[in-house]
Image 1 (cartoon, rainbow, N blue to C red):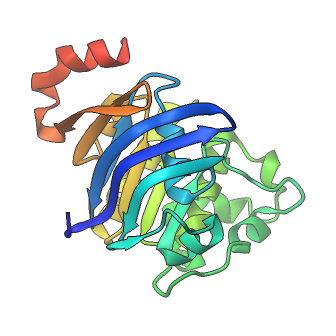
Image 2: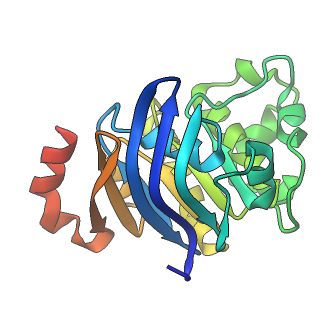
Length: 234
C-alpha cells in the first residue's frame, strides 16, 4: 500500500485489560476523506486514538507516509504531521478564543493563517476575546478544528465533528471539510451520521466489535443502503 498516506494493519488496542481493537485494517490515500462508520462501541474513536498513540497499549502496524509509528510516543506522532480533533473538543476553559487558537505549536510549514481560519469560521473572529467554554457547541467545534489547521498537519483526524450540532452548523462543517480536501488536506472522519458522511467522503469503512467489516465507496452507498442500515441499526 505504498500510495497510502496512512496504512493501518493488524491494529490491536487495549485500555488496561480491556481488549478493544482486534486486528483493524484500513488505509487512507493522500487527499482523500475517509470515514469510519459504526454503532456506538464499535471501536471508531479507539481506532483514532490508537493512530495517535493515546490508548493504553497497542500492537500492529500504523504507517504514516511509509514510516512505522507504532513504537513512537504520541507527541512524536503529532510532530510527523497528524492532528486529532476529539469529540469532546478539548477547549481550555481558562483561555479565550484567541489563546486557544494559538496554543498548539506548528509541526510543519503550510498551516492555515489565522485570517484564513476566520474566513472559514467567521463566528470565531467575532468571539475572539470570549472564554473558550462560553462558546456555543458549534463555535467550540469550529475552534477545535481551526486550532489544528494552524499546525501544518496534513492528516486530520476528526472525531464526530457534527455530533449534537444544529443543521446550519453541520452544513458549515461540511463546507469546511470539502474546502480542506480541495486544499490538499487528508481527513479521517468518525461519523454516526452517514448521510452527512456521504456529502464529504470518498470511501467509508464500517466497524463492528473492534474490527473493520466492510468498505463501501461513496458512489456505491445507495446500492448498499440496506446493508448499511443493518450495520448501523438505523
